[in-house]
Image (cartoon, rainbow, N blue to C red):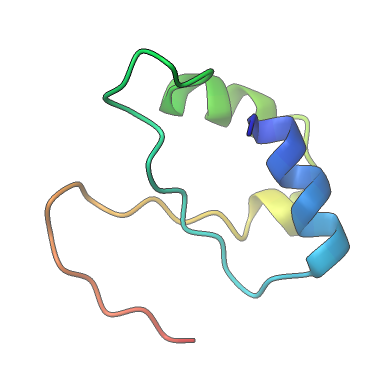
Length: 64
């Protein structure tokens, strides 16, 4: 899934938060974080503001 596809999905399902995971470290991935963030610059603000990048390898409390 590309960032543009993710934005379209999020417009359809209206999540409260978006946590990008599994986007780096393998050759078959189509975009890395920089590519995702570039596409998010063109996404609607109500969607791009929902993206939260978690630090790699650390535990985080996620409120659902």
